[in-house]
View 1: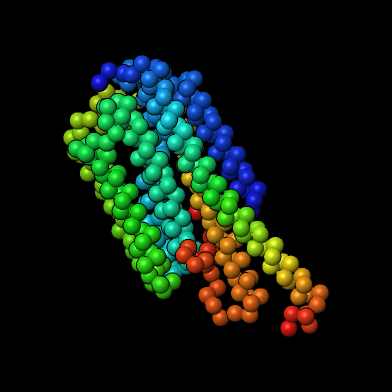
View 2: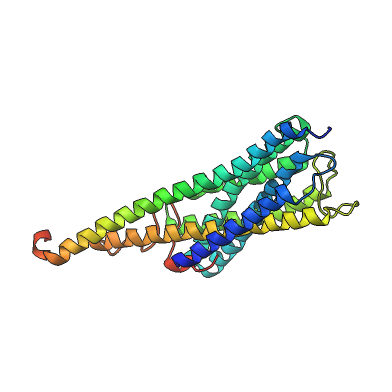
Length: 249
Length: 60
C-alpha cells in the first residue's frame, strides 16, 4: 500500500469523524426521553455496526481463502477479526457507560441485545487461542478460515434472532412503529457511521501494511542469513502477508 | 427512568467518547511501536548489506 493512499484515507477519517462529532454536539437535537445522555448513541451504535460487519467481512475473506488457498485472504480475515474485536471492546465499554447512565446498572443480563453481543464478542475472542494452538501454518490458516466462516454466519443469524425477540429495555431506534430517528438525528448518525466505517477500513489497511512490511523484513533477514528454504511469508504468530494483501481489503 | 441533568449526563458522555478516543490512540501507538521496530531492523539489515558489499571477504 502506498503511504500517500493511507495518508489520504487517514485525512478522510479525520474529516468525517470530526464532522460527525460536531454534528452530534452542535446540530443533533436532544432526545426527549434520554436527554444529553443519548449522545452516546452516535459512537456506540456505529462501533457496534462496524464490528459486526467486520466479522461478516472476515467470513467472506475466509471463504475466498478456502476456495483459492491464497494466504492474502487469510491475512485479511485475520486483520478484519482483530479490528472488529477491538471495536467490540469499545462497544461493550461505551454500552456499559450508557447503561449505567440510563438504567442505573453497568450490565443487564436479561437483555437479549447486550448478551448476544457479548456472546459474539467472546466467540471471536477464542479465534486467537484456536489459531495459535496450531503449529502448522497451512492447517492454522485453514482451521481459522473455517472458524471465521462459521462464526461469520452466526452474526446475522444472531442479529435476526435478537430483533425478533421482545425487548423491554434496549431501545429499538430503526424501523420502529413510531417512524425511527428524526431527519437531523439520522443525518448525524449516518455521518458518524460513515466515519467509523472508513476508520475500520483504514486501520485494516494500516495493519495489513505493517504485517506485509514485517513479513518482507523476515524474508530479507532469512535471505541474508542464507536460509532460502524457509517459509517465504509471515511472522511467527501472524498469518503470512504478501505485499499484494494491502492493495484492497 | 427520567433523563439525567446535563451536568450529570455530561460526565458519562465525555467518558464514552474518551474511551473511543483512547482505544484508537492505544491501537495506533502499538502499531507505531511495531513500525518503529521494523524501521530499526530494516536499518540494521541495510547496514549489514552495505558492509557486505564494501568488504565481502571480511564477512566470509
